[in-house]
Amino acid sequence: MADDDRNYVNANSAALELLGHDLSTLRTMRIDDITIPEYRPFLDDVWAEFLSRGGTIGRFSVLRSDGSPVDIGFNATANVASGLHLSIFINPSVTGAAEGLDEDEIANKNFEEPVRVVADAGSAPVLDADEPRVMSLLALGLNWHEVAEKVGTTAGEVRRIMGAAMQELGTRTRAHAVSIAMRVGEIDPDALAPETP
Image (cartoon, rainbow, N blue to C red):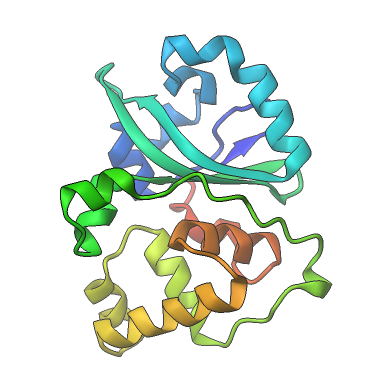
């Protein structure tokens, strides 16, 4: 989660692990700090377009704490709360492997689909009671089996619940579904970040 000035204000444990930072360190950083140097000259224009569109999805290279770049897919939604913007990072090799895709399928996975921007919560679909909880747990980095254990069901049922939520929201990826659900008020953004010290 970042503010209007691209300062990080919070992150879940999966994002912290991917970037190799602890939360207190990340809160001293801006999006610019994890952006590879060759992309930095374009950030002002990209950020302005992101805020104007209300969201974006695509591929990006970010810098880990050790300076090594990692290619990610991302789904970002502007103004999930006043002045706060959510980015969900997707490691294509990890998510593809979890979905049973081979290396070619992972490489060809489409992260360039258009972003569905929901104008207001009044016109948005309403999720059933289980869907926001399952989506929140998956967004926190839990796998199908861990979510199933917390919810008290099976991994297959968790997949079914997530699939139903994605269909209801008109999305093709879990990250996109979570960002839409946050935008329309079905998921509380504060529930996706670790406790503040």
